[in-house]
Length: 168
Image (cartoon, rainbow, N blue to C red; front, side, top):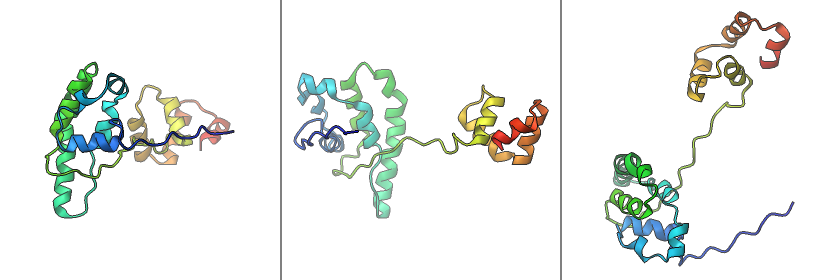
């Protein structure tokens, strides 16, 4: 199966994430207005803050700045960001508040947390027994019970040995 070739990166584009993050670090409050109407339609404030909330750190001073970005993002953006979803310019202006305006930093992507063990047979068993529980509650149940306890739980729910073997 052929894959679609990637479009070349335009490093001069307003929508290039490096340019967006540099404007964020400079607290460039006019950056959103400097975009064309077409660029404003394509602008993704969510992706920009996902990148913007994390900076690389090496020295202890840089770790303080890293902590500042995370705390500022939590304090200013995470609280109000989605209530402004119909107003990307306001989202941009709010995003500029997280920068200490000292210098341009190297930002890193924060990946979504992967569900560890979500496909595990024991997790599937617990989801079947307790369909109303959230994933973190399933993980908690799994961590505080061993296989022997979970097998007994299956027997208590009327499962026969053949069905129990599927999961254990």
